[in-house]
Image 1: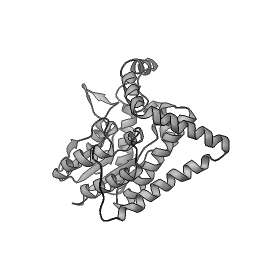
Image 2 (image 1 turned 90 degrees about the vertical axis):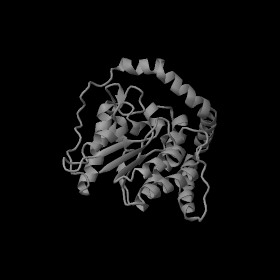
Image 3 (image 1 turned 60 degrees about the vertical axis):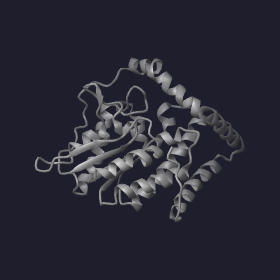
Image 4 (image 1 turned 30 degrees about the vertical axis):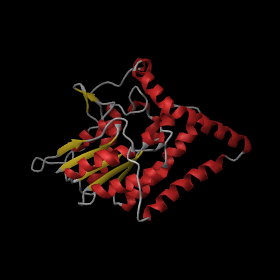
Amino acid sequence: MTFVALGDSLTQGVGDPVDGAWRGWAALLAAGLGTPQRPVEFHNLAVSGAQTCDVHARQTPRAVALRPDVVSVVVGVNDTLRRTFDIRAVAVRLDEVYGAVTADSAVLLTACMPDPGAMLGLPGALGRPLARRQRAVNAVVHALSERHGAVHLHAADEEWVADRALWSADRLHPGERGHRVFAARFHALLAAAGLAPGPAPAVEPELPPPAASASLLWLATAGTGWIARRCTDLLPQLLGLAVEEVRHQVRGTSGGLDVRDAHAAAVALAGLGTAERQVEAA
């Protein structure tokens, strides 16, 4: 059996260090997909910072060449953190990625994710625009997962976000416990469908969770650079979105913003039936 994982830092394993490298949920899941008679050949193609355009243009051709039996595609959060966010382009890319990797009947794994604003604890006027973007991405992932017959994991629920014991010091990636829970939830779905004959991943971590000081250290070192890079790209637009948010709150028309973004996701999905589409891969 061949299992190929596509996506961004979540699937790369950031937050779950083992022997100087990232392990992550996909590697943990891989161990529970095979048997001694049919071991798993695991390939992790995920790259930190990847957006749907990267998965579409770079990771998918490599995955198809490996002829996987199981393939996971978990991506989209990084798209919401860019000023170039376009839900139509996200929908087109994911539709094509899902179609390509399942063309030879591979089992497709997908997941919807919590919005990064909630994870970072951003104030409402800044956080709500990001939440709408992530809801739009999740709506697209939900619909396309059904269309392509994917095994879909609902990982955007409030309980998952609220349990800080699941998250690493950076507040954006799961820690070891979080990666284990993510893998175990996928394994349960696959086992229910008769697709995971191996043992379920253990959910209890082998290492202690990071101390509170680790979060401060991350913010003072790597986190500063991470935030600076995201702010350079997104902050001017996000401030504009926050002003719009406050203006609608004052007028009592905030619900219109929800309707607008939900409509944009619906239009993006409806537009997938067109014969020709051009996708920016960079």
